[in-house]
Image (cartoon, rainbow, N blue to C red; front, side):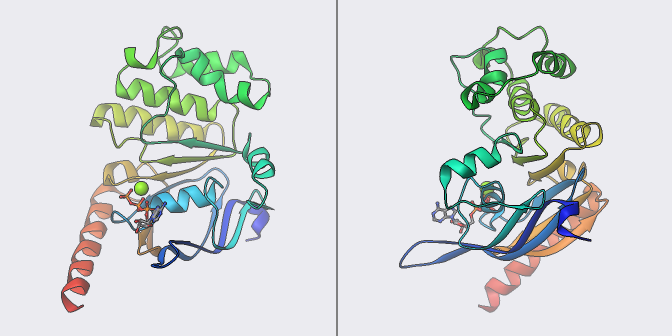
Length: 252
Ligand SMILES: Nc1ncnc2c1ncn2[C@@H]1O[C@H](COP(=O)(O)OP(=O)(O)OP(=O)(O)O)[C@@H](O)[C@H]1O
Ligand SMILES: [Mg+2]
């Protein structure tokens, strides 16, 4: 497989925090994600999941290694150029939704394009909001919506301009299981119907089972992976990691 075939490619990417005491949040991570795939990232708290997404999307600067997006290297040395590069290619969904409270649903969805000074396909934005059941909520503000509805607005905002790559950091972390299922189905559809490539951090084996592949992180490294995951298998694997790290801690 060549690099051109991957929507996202990491080559030995490391991220170290701190000057005196160094924390290796990512330790030589390499991976390739083909177009149109849905990948879940799991692992204990502090294992580097958010750092992986932040570095891969260029929100944070890596310490070492190469990141290729659609075969093109992500260069974070020039912030303006990096922002321009990300624009239209990358969408990001945060656990805390990050909607602007004073703007309506419609304004929130159109905001990134307005900031970027690019045009939005308003028909597509409208159709997307209809699809996710918010077509009659365009003039509502985030506070007037449930958590699941707010997260769907955040996802609509992230995918309206069809970025090839969508990163989502615990997008269902704050939702109950019914609302989480709505959000996960929307992500799955954006992969199957729009050919988007999705990378999602989650702690929930049920959420991970919506993905095609699960990557398991521990101490900043990919330590395992699972294809065509099922929730029970993912939960069992997570329990093994928990037991293994407790054994290591005892031995230390
Ligand atoms: N800005 C920062 N400054 C210093 N250390 C950081 C910073 N961000 C993350 N770290 C450290 O890097 C490591 C990985 O953090 P990260 O946030 O990626 O973990 P995570 O897997 O997303 O955890 P969680 O499941 O709790 O969200 C941790 O040891 C964390 O303390
Ligand atoms: Mg995190």
